[in-house]
Amino acid sequence: MRDKYEPVIGLEIHAQLKTESKIFCGCATRFGDEPNSNTCPVCLGLPGALPALNRQVVEKAALAALALNLKINGESIFSRKNYFYPDLPKGYQISQYDRPFSERGWVEIPSAERNEFGAATEWKVKRFGITRLHIEEDAGKSLHEGMPESASRSYVDLNRSGVPLAEIVSEPDFRSSWEAFDYVQYVRRTLLYVGVCDGNMEEGSLRCDANVSVRLRGAEKFGTRVEVKNLNSFRFLQHALEYEIDRQIAALEAGEPIVQETRLWNERVSRTYSMRSKEEAHDYRYFPEPDLPPLTVSESQIASARDALPELPEARRLRFIREYALSFDDAAQLTDSRPTADFFEAAARASGNAKAASNWLLNELVRELKNSGGDLAQSPVSPESLGEMIRLIDSGSISGKMGKDVLVEMYKTGRAAPDVVKEMGGGQVSDESEIRALVDQAVAANPKQLENYRAGKTALFGFFVGQVMKLSGGRANPQLVNSLLKQALGEQGGNES
Ligand SMILES: [Zn+2]
Image (cartoon, rainbow, N blue to C red):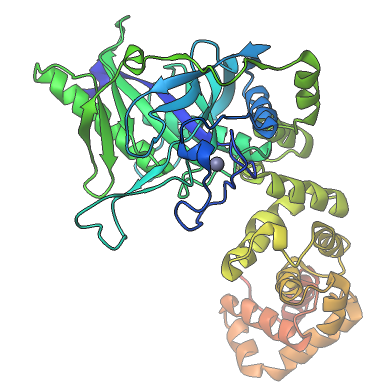
């Protein structure tokens, strides 16, 4: 039944721009402070207080816009969006309406449907349009829980009031919940890469609303759309979209109309429920903000923002595949955050072996970080010292197996690989006569096993390897041990068939 229909999804992302102070006053934007401690007449909306635009907000918005391929307008206008709500003391929000900061952007990113275990099926590069990115102030926050008299009243915290936001509105280009998921992840990653948003969804620095409708596959016209709010994690977004698509299809199949409305996602009961009928733009009585001049951005400001842009995650992922011959998955993991990608490139340079740098970083080092709850920025193992360790392996000084122990010790003590190796009793032994002596010793010390081996229990070969490794303190070159042991057991009449 679901195949008969096609979902159409558009997304609005509200990203908090990472500035020290608010958009129209000097109050701090810090999260977690005492309620209403970061407020002043401007962000409290007291009569007569005048807003003054924070230039930092414009610089950050410009970086975000360029990273999403949006065209920045030379002149944009702030508008008042009028509505009443307890967390909005002015009775209006300063936003942008008919002349936004930037328009007509796009991203081209890999997206995939997921199977029942959540694993990606086939990655395909898709292009999603971005209608606009505009600048606005955030409202305050109503607190319904956790206060002394929460049972009988609600409280308002205006610390968020006037925090700068970029609202990023997509085209209705998504045809599945996973496409929406992949897009929001990419936008978040990009904003983090360019350093304009901390991306913390739990603290509300990145929020997402979705417009969802369904139509018969092949139909031209969009169905009636429903706005779903409260999607403050990637999981919620994907769950809510799936639920809403199913709900709308079931309604259409039953001959019921879809009501244009705003619904909230409740993760606890895994469903959306109606919050209010959806407003139209004209309900907000937008008009130009009389207290602020038009916002102008010059060509040279745009050019310097463009110069300040780092390499973006998707471009970097493609380059990693091309330049270092990495797999799609490894390149995607390495470019997931800028610190990881930077660490990898430094380790690849230091080791001269990109493939090994990728493996050691994504497997061994990431495991150590996970176990100790640390993050890469504070890793006691620098990219240079990881590179040095890899060089010891590549030159045969230590085995790959020893490398794992060496890395654990490097992580624990912050010391360099050669020091750790020395302390562990030296590097790998690759001297043939030295190993042959150990092999002879191991064979002579275990006559019983030798007899069984000769009688056809060839699985005992592993036992002898273990004995030799033990005698060498784990330092014998494993390939040499294998070949010399084969010789020795063979010479003594071992039957390997
Ligand atoms: Zn203020």
